[in-house]
Image 1: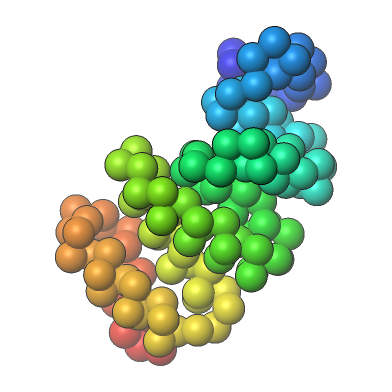
Image 2: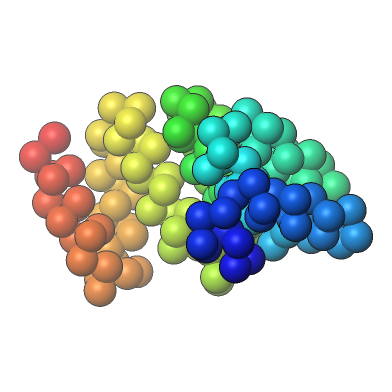
Length: 142
């Protein structure tokens, strides 16, 4: 993990690949995918996440990471599907991020009505999220 945070992505990839061979869990898969993304290979990162979800479909962290990758790839339908799948898992640790990312995806899709609807619900649950409050004001102008 240190290599990743220090920006030594080639080294991190080697470490995570080795660890994945021994212990294929969500955290290793997430970091390996993030590492491949940092190295410019979002396609392989997405493949890693999708393969992991076939074996372990109830993992909100991987759904969120996959959605972010799909968003970067401009695969808006894929991103939305990943975020919504993660939301259905209802993992307390990732639900806020997943819901916010779902809203952002609706905005990219230019479905402002759906984004407004989801944002109104989001700010009721997370009123301290200043970024969301600002985004809600922006959405109200759409």
